Amino acid sequence: MITLVTGGTKCGKSGYAEKVLENFRGPKYYIATMNPVGDDADEIIARHRESRRNKNYITLECPRDVDKLDLPIGCGVLLECIGNLCANEMYVGGNIFRPSDKIISNLKSLGETASEFVIVTNEVGCDGNSYSADLMAYVSEIAHINSRIAEFADNVVECVYGIPVALKGRLV
Amino acid sequence: MKFVIGGAYQGKIDTACEMFGLKESDMVNGSTCDFEEVFTAKCIKSYHRIIARLMAQGVSPVDFTKRLCLENSGAVIIMDEIGCGIVPVEKSERKRREETGRCGCIISSASDTVIRVICGIPVFLKGGRDED
Image 1 (tube, chains in turn purple, yellow):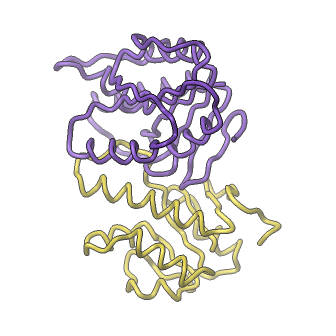
Image 2 (cartoon, one colour; image 1 turned 60 degrees about the vertical axis):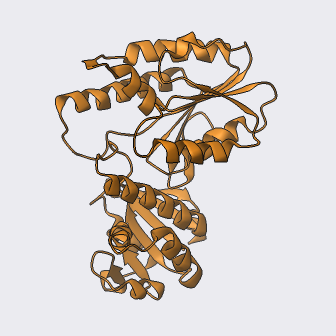
């Protein structure tokens, strides 16, 4: 099963994603895409680590190129999150790429390897602000990635102030 | 508690009035009210503004919201959804968005009814019309 979890900030996306994998038997991987740099990174990483403690995840730091990961067939995977992965693939050494097709294809392959695959993404297009062209390109890349993943995902869930809402498929 | 959420100007106040038999004069306004008023008010609108104002004064909105849920458990809370955008560059703005998310989770967990209003249409995320 592939589950896409979306929603606003601090609305319970990670908690729901972990719940999907709670009863998974077999090796469980947590793919951490955050680039551990910046003001809030340490705090966020510490909080997420604490939340996954004793839940038997093998953590893999992978800020980009998730196709390079060599995961066993039939494993459980929680990837967090598309917002970071996209930013890391998009802004590289002063260059700006359009990584959505690469990311979609990488995640599709991961979905074929894993038997339970949960992808946490972000809802970034609803603040009504106009940003620079480069930032709007990021908003557009994420929207494209989300829409395409939603096509092949079995379940798409939006977390709204802690309440999971099934947009496609079903809730756990 | 009852919790009414949604984007700005989607019809949350009208929905709250209709669903819970309120008048707008029953509501205290989170943009302007005294903080203590919320612990006895029938209904608080713009609760996300209270969060911003508390943070500006160095008060924890999470603790404040927990107290609200304990002391005014019959209240109707109306609040915007603000977390679905680009992460702000300004740290205080990032914190405000995050604290708003956390407070929203606390209120929805304490509520028997959560309604999301979109284009004036109430969508029940928790509870239902029958339980009103």
